Length: 390
Image (cartoon, rainbow, N blue to C red):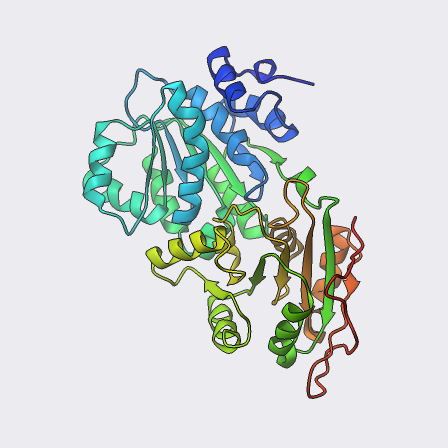
């Protein structure tokens, strides 16, 4: 079993890591850290919660030249929630090492952020819109940036940030390292990575975390028109500590919440169209277990690192297997048991078959009786159902 010192981390940082319980690198860290220390460009297929923040952050902290009091590492994330999560994880190692991290994002006083940047920041985590604004309008220097990290690239593309990322990338005219992370790698993302990176090493940082043994899978055969009623019946019958309910679009999230809030107690919703302060309050309430059921989209869930989620409900079947794997990974963490349940309409069966094959799962079929004779599966169902686990 290797130690961090065996893969290139210096003794000062090793001692800081040890004081925080990091003694042996995980396989993820063992694979990524030497490549990042060498300055290589990297494509990492990694979901939030897979451990890639430490795998990326630890070597980048070491690469900072402490004698230069300017931004040397620039990390781009699509949402404030992800930016704050990245900053918090990195700070626990960076600050004791004598490296200054900071975060900038929209919705906060830009003058305060600029004052902090001018006082000296070496690792900057930022949302694309805010840092583009700062670079373009406030002449923020990027000449000392030696590493650019593009995190959650697939969501950057979905949210329309690619033009901002292009602008930032083009401002870095000096030689620099680029690290490109994405939970999914559809063809447009692969094309984007090829555009941004040079002689990149491609590794799957989440390969071993895809489907833990404590994660069970199930599905409900139900027509689209009966999904809302099926959800109401499901939450009555299943014993759930907390659940994330995934829809594919913001409009689906809002619609489901409007139609379900009076019949499902402890229900709330979260998507990128909400005011930032409201989003922050909802996430905090969910973390404190003041919300039991949260309807959300994929991008919002990526900014949430919450250990108490017992169930994932795919109200909408995702459009590719990698998104399903990412959603399911929000439960069954740190050895806890969890269940991922999908509502499969006739229109979804082909895609769900592809998901089952790709994920290597054999989900149980849940039978739900729908009042009024709906065409979901009829039957009993136990509040303490036992599912097959991998």
